[in-house]
Every structure is written in C-alpha cells, then in structure tokens.
Length: 216
Image (cartoon, rainbow, N blue to C red; front, side, top):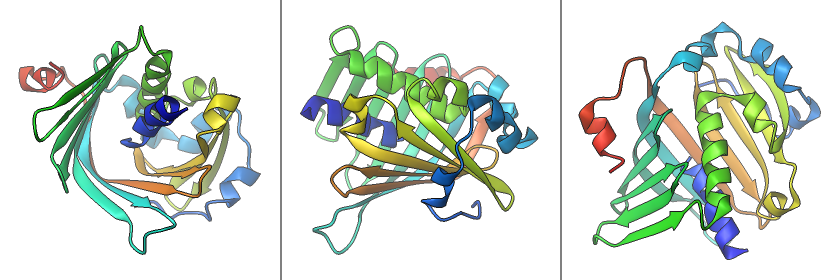
C-alpha cells in the first residue's frame, strides 16, 4: 500500500471563481458533456505540444497548524512526459514518463521506478497526462466525473472508480479556464493537497533541445 500511495501521490505534483468544493459532486457529467462545460477556451490544448509554468503546492496536515509549502516550475510535454522541478524548500526534480518515474534530490541521489516492474507508474502517467491535456474521456476510465461552470471558467470533480485507488484518496477537484489552474486532493486520512498553477504557457511548437534534455 505504501508504494501505491507514493505512485498516486505523484499525480499531485501535479484565477477561476470557485464553487463550493462539495457542490461539484452533485453534478455528474459524462465525458461527452465535458466539451460543453470546458467551451472553446480549452480547445487549444487538444493540439498543443504541452504546457510550461510555475506551481505552488500546499500540503495541509491535521497535526500541523500551517501547510507545508513548496514552489517550483514544471514542463508537460505530450509526447515525452512531465518534468517537475521543486526549488523551495529543497531542490529536487521528478520526471514521469510512460516508461517509468525517477527523482533526483539536491544531494544528487536518484530513485527510479520502471513501469514494467510497477504497473502503477503507467497508471499515474496516463492520469497525469490526461489531466494536463484536459482529456476527460481518458480520465473517465479511472474516475467518476463531475462538473459545473464557475464565472469565466469551470470546476471538475473526480472520484476514483477502482477500490485500490479509492483506498489512497477520496476525491480531486480541479478549477480552470484555458487550462487547469488549481488542483485539490482530499485523501482518505484527512490530508489535503492544493496545487496552484499561477503562470502557464501553452506550447504550440516543437520542444527545444534544452527542454528535451530535461528528461534525460
């Protein structure tokens, strides 16, 4: 179970007006209905090479009075994977591809998990890629989907279908407009993780050599 929690936790490394978090789960939506909810603003993602931006992540633990804050930058490349660079409070890099996952800490230590040896990595990659691309048809393979409009954007709720995944976290709520801007996860132990993506650029052209090198 600890390995399962690790793999699904990787999904969270992964400005809209928000509805109340629980309200979205009163509005189930089929994947085909998501297109109408997202509108034309999110369509450029369908043809995008990927996304680049900054993140702020807060981990709320019941036993701590203040959340644990980390910040950094990320790159999602549709045909390669996700590069997640935490700069504060400690420098580390996490890379997720369909072939596996690996992380490097500021001391130079590296951890690798091959998808061939741990199928959960492939599941994490599939979900993470679909989340960044707003591919709710793919997300519907693993989650019950919900959605409501919010001001100039939308809010989507996800609840896991499989018992193994439901044992790790209870639900996820995503707020956005042209792309996901805020992701919140509630786990089964009362912990809550919030990720803000305040600055995101949609990439339309081929990746630069420097960007591809990040995945080496």
